[in-house]
Length: 65
Length: 140
Image (cartoon, rainbow over all chains, first blue to last red):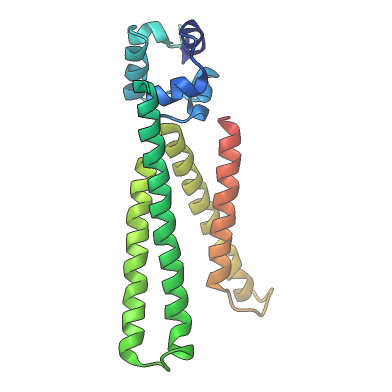
């Protein structure tokens, strides 16, 4: 699954630690999400989308055609 | 202080409190294990009542340590929980295979020593720590 987390975070001038604090997760988790090493649960994905005031599909995309 | 910082403080405080509670019960359990192991011989000369109390205290502290460990894991975020569960699964599988082989060593007379449960506990700890380190590195 692809995501635009890194771009969205940069647009908001947040560090990984700041984003992690807002999501109540560790900085390592934010990094793993941004690098695509870890796919979030639906609950966390919705939480991320809500934080950026976007729809979930604007943040996350399925890689399969 | 912004709302974000308050959240951060709450999150960190919860986790630190949980770590401390976990450590407290772990120390208590280890202490009670020593007392139940050596107390009968060194302190109360195998008095049955004291031995039973020490044994029950050890079981109770063990149960409380487990309960607090579960609460502690619930405070982890989902990646940390995933790493914990994967390490536990790897440890369980590896220890099953290794302990069967270890027991077999004596049966097939490749060694004359009786299998020691202490060695299995050390094996569990080392495999769990190693798998945690490897998985944390994988998701870094």
